[in-house]
Length: 165
Image 1 (tube, one colour):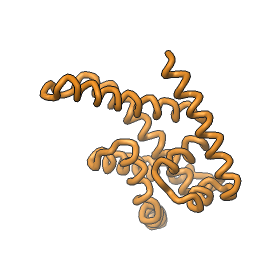
Image 2 (cartoon, rainbow, N blue to C red; image 1 turned 120 degrees about the vertical axis):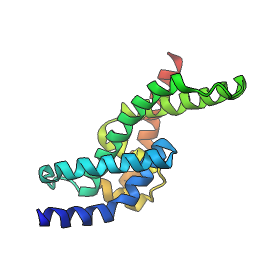
Image 3 (cartoon, rainbow, N blue to C red; image 1 turned 45 degrees about the vertical axis):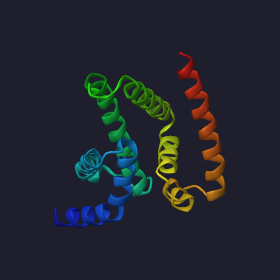
Image 4 (cartoon, one colour; image 1 turned 180 degrees about the vertical axis):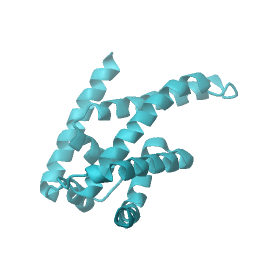
Protein backbone atom coordinates (compact mmCIF):
# COMPACT_ATOMS: atom_id res chain seq x y z
CA UNK A 1 0.00 0.00 0.00
CA UNK A 2 2.88 2.38 0.82
CA UNK A 3 4.42 1.62 -2.59
CA UNK A 4 1.13 2.36 -4.35
CA UNK A 5 0.79 5.66 -2.47
CA UNK A 6 4.35 6.71 -3.37
CA UNK A 7 3.85 5.73 -7.02
CA UNK A 8 0.53 7.58 -7.13
CA UNK A 9 2.07 10.70 -5.59
CA UNK A 10 4.79 10.71 -8.27
CA UNK A 11 2.23 10.17 -11.03
CA UNK A 12 0.03 12.95 -9.66
CA UNK A 13 2.92 15.41 -9.40
CA UNK A 14 4.10 14.62 -12.94
CA UNK A 15 0.67 14.84 -14.58
CA UNK A 16 -1.74 16.97 -12.55
CA UNK A 17 -0.90 20.32 -14.20
CA UNK A 18 -1.42 18.93 -17.71
CA UNK A 19 -4.64 17.22 -16.70
CA UNK A 20 -5.92 20.39 -15.00
CA UNK A 21 -5.25 22.34 -18.22
CA UNK A 22 -7.02 19.66 -20.23
CA UNK A 23 -10.05 19.80 -17.91
CA UNK A 24 -10.03 23.60 -17.94
CA UNK A 25 -9.88 23.51 -21.74
CA UNK A 26 -13.05 21.45 -21.80
CA UNK A 27 -14.94 23.47 -19.19
CA UNK A 28 -13.49 26.99 -19.09
CA UNK A 29 -14.33 26.91 -15.38
CA UNK A 30 -11.75 26.65 -12.59
CA UNK A 31 -14.04 24.85 -10.13
CA UNK A 32 -15.28 22.34 -12.69
CA UNK A 33 -11.72 21.75 -13.90
CA UNK A 34 -10.58 21.04 -10.34
CA UNK A 35 -13.52 18.68 -9.80
CA UNK A 36 -12.71 16.83 -13.03
CA UNK A 37 -9.03 16.70 -12.07
CA UNK A 38 -9.97 15.07 -8.76
CA UNK A 39 -12.38 12.69 -10.45
CA UNK A 40 -9.72 11.72 -13.00
CA UNK A 41 -7.12 10.98 -10.34
CA UNK A 42 -9.65 9.11 -8.23
CA UNK A 43 -10.15 6.82 -11.25
CA UNK A 44 -6.38 6.58 -11.68
CA UNK A 45 -6.00 5.56 -8.03
CA UNK A 46 -8.83 3.01 -8.28
CA UNK A 47 -7.40 1.46 -11.45
CA UNK A 48 -3.65 1.87 -10.92
CA UNK A 49 -3.16 -1.86 -10.37
CA UNK A 50 -4.93 -2.51 -13.71
CA UNK A 51 -2.49 -0.34 -15.70
CA UNK A 52 -0.63 -2.75 -17.98
CA UNK A 53 2.30 -0.56 -19.15
CA UNK A 54 1.24 -1.04 -22.79
CA UNK A 55 1.24 2.72 -23.23
CA UNK A 56 2.89 5.55 -21.36
CA UNK A 57 1.11 6.22 -18.07
CA UNK A 58 0.56 9.85 -19.11
CA UNK A 59 -1.34 8.64 -22.20
CA UNK A 60 -3.46 6.35 -20.03
CA UNK A 61 -4.24 9.22 -17.64
CA UNK A 62 -5.03 11.51 -20.57
CA UNK A 63 -7.55 8.95 -21.85
CA UNK A 64 -9.21 8.78 -18.45
CA UNK A 65 -9.35 12.59 -18.25
CA UNK A 66 -10.75 13.01 -21.77
CA UNK A 67 -13.49 10.47 -21.12
CA UNK A 68 -14.26 12.05 -17.73
CA UNK A 69 -14.53 15.49 -19.37
CA UNK A 70 -16.73 14.23 -22.20
CA UNK A 71 -19.08 12.56 -19.72
CA UNK A 72 -19.22 15.79 -17.71
CA UNK A 73 -19.95 17.86 -20.82
CA UNK A 74 -22.81 15.58 -21.86
CA UNK A 75 -24.46 15.99 -18.45
CA UNK A 76 -23.70 19.74 -18.33
CA UNK A 77 -25.27 20.29 -21.75
CA UNK A 78 -28.50 18.72 -20.54
CA UNK A 79 -28.54 20.92 -17.43
CA UNK A 80 -27.48 24.10 -19.24
CA UNK A 81 -30.55 24.11 -21.48
CA UNK A 82 -32.73 24.67 -18.42
CA UNK A 83 -30.50 27.18 -16.65
CA UNK A 84 -29.78 30.06 -19.06
CA UNK A 85 -30.17 33.09 -16.86
CA UNK A 86 -33.34 35.07 -17.50
CA UNK A 87 -31.39 38.30 -16.79
CA UNK A 88 -29.48 38.03 -20.08
CA UNK A 89 -30.91 40.00 -22.95
CA UNK A 90 -32.43 38.00 -25.80
CA UNK A 91 -29.47 38.82 -28.09
CA UNK A 92 -26.97 37.79 -25.46
CA UNK A 93 -28.91 34.55 -24.93
CA UNK A 94 -28.87 33.86 -28.67
CA UNK A 95 -25.13 34.63 -28.97
CA UNK A 96 -24.33 32.55 -25.91
CA UNK A 97 -26.59 29.76 -27.05
CA UNK A 98 -25.09 29.74 -30.55
CA UNK A 99 -21.52 29.75 -29.21
CA UNK A 100 -22.36 26.99 -26.71
CA UNK A 101 -23.95 24.97 -29.51
CA UNK A 102 -20.83 25.38 -31.68
CA UNK A 103 -18.54 24.33 -28.83
CA UNK A 104 -20.84 21.45 -27.93
CA UNK A 105 -20.91 20.39 -31.59
CA UNK A 106 -17.11 20.52 -31.75
CA UNK A 107 -16.84 18.28 -28.68
CA UNK A 108 -19.52 15.99 -30.07
CA UNK A 109 -17.39 15.66 -33.23
CA UNK A 110 -14.28 15.06 -31.13
CA UNK A 111 -16.10 12.32 -29.25
CA UNK A 112 -16.71 10.53 -32.58
CA UNK A 113 -12.97 10.29 -33.29
CA UNK A 114 -10.88 7.27 -32.41
CA UNK A 115 -9.47 7.38 -28.90
CA UNK A 116 -5.89 8.16 -30.00
CA UNK A 117 -7.16 10.95 -32.26
CA UNK A 118 -9.28 12.41 -29.44
CA UNK A 119 -6.28 12.53 -27.17
CA UNK A 120 -4.07 14.17 -29.79
CA UNK A 121 -6.58 16.82 -30.87
CA UNK A 122 -7.46 17.59 -27.25
CA UNK A 123 -3.79 18.23 -26.51
CA UNK A 124 -3.58 20.44 -29.63
CA UNK A 125 -6.62 22.42 -28.43
CA UNK A 126 -4.97 22.59 -25.02
CA UNK A 127 -1.90 24.10 -26.73
CA UNK A 128 0.43 21.34 -25.57
CA UNK A 129 3.70 21.65 -27.53
CA UNK A 130 4.07 19.20 -30.43
CA UNK A 131 7.21 17.50 -29.01
CA UNK A 132 5.26 16.71 -25.83
CA UNK A 133 2.25 15.44 -27.80
CA UNK A 134 4.59 13.25 -29.84
CA UNK A 135 6.08 11.94 -26.61
CA UNK A 136 2.70 11.20 -25.01
CA UNK A 137 1.27 9.60 -28.15
CA UNK A 138 4.43 7.63 -28.92
CA UNK A 139 4.82 8.79 -32.53
CA UNK A 140 7.47 10.94 -34.20
CA UNK A 141 6.89 14.67 -34.51
CA UNK A 142 6.77 14.39 -38.32
CA UNK A 143 4.09 11.70 -38.18
CA UNK A 144 2.27 13.72 -35.54
CA UNK A 145 1.96 16.74 -37.85
CA UNK A 146 0.49 14.53 -40.59
CA UNK A 147 -1.86 12.88 -38.10
CA UNK A 148 -3.03 16.28 -36.77
CA UNK A 149 -3.69 17.47 -40.32
CA UNK A 150 -5.81 14.36 -41.00
CA UNK A 151 -7.64 14.68 -37.68
CA UNK A 152 -8.51 18.30 -38.51
CA UNK A 153 -9.83 17.20 -41.92
CA UNK A 154 -11.93 14.50 -40.27
CA UNK A 155 -13.25 16.98 -37.68
CA UNK A 156 -14.16 19.46 -40.42
CA UNK A 157 -16.10 16.76 -42.27
CA UNK A 158 -17.88 15.67 -39.07
CA UNK A 159 -18.64 19.27 -38.11
CA UNK A 160 -20.05 20.09 -41.55
CA UNK A 161 -22.10 16.89 -41.50
CA UNK A 162 -23.69 17.69 -38.14
CA UNK A 163 -24.18 21.36 -39.00
CA UNK A 164 -26.32 20.35 -42.01
CA UNK A 165 -28.58 18.15 -39.88
